[in-house]
Amino acid sequence: ETGVTQTPRHLVMGMTNKKSLKCEQHLGHNAMYWYKQSAKKPLELMFVYSLEERVENNSVPSRFSPECPNSSHLFLHLHTLQPEDSALYLCASSQDRSSYYNEQFFGPGTRLTVL
Amino acid sequence: SQKIEQNSEALNIQEGKTATLTCNYTNYSPAYLQWYRQDPGRGPVFLLLIRENEKEKRKERLKVTFDTTLKQSLFHITASQPADSATYLCALPDSSYKLIFGSGTRLLVRP
Image 1 (cartoon, each protein chain N blue to C red):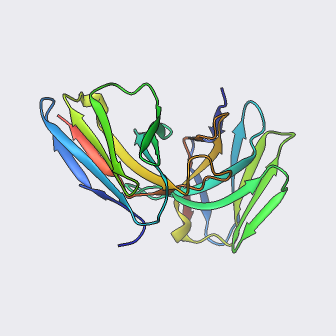
Image 2: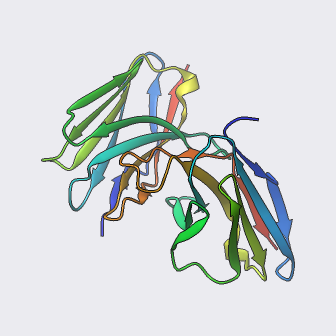
């Protein structure tokens, strides 16, 4: 596979469930990102990892827990979510976090619905 | 903090015409500005980057301009096609080089 892949593509969960989103990049990049995209709103940056180290946490509630075991994989662990957390969750990667032009490559996203 | 403004109303044009989308920012001029295309239910796809010292950038039917005096970038698609219908996002780096995105403008090209 090439580019950035995300699984699952769709997820429906109850507020008491625990689930995980997975992202994998096949581009040899050193930086990975989680974004949240709600209807009619701009992409919201959630987390940034650079060389497996979390370098950004944009005031995200603790019910979202990221994990980056290596530079190719990124997870977002979800627990006790709220209905307002329903959104498209996008993973992205770039060459590195501080590269001057920082073009980002996005995965197809996971459409999350919290009941 | 930097804010990006893109027209929230959809742009509806006839096939073959030129589509022009606007991106305005509010504070300091960024070192560069990027444009992405996003189709429904999909992740954004990078299209073009223009640097602060460049007035214009072209790629096939796409053209981007960057006016630091007006704090504005224009994105043009010439000879538009129905397949160009999508949402177009403007993005630029904040002070720590994180990318921030506009809400996007939806383009509809009628056959």
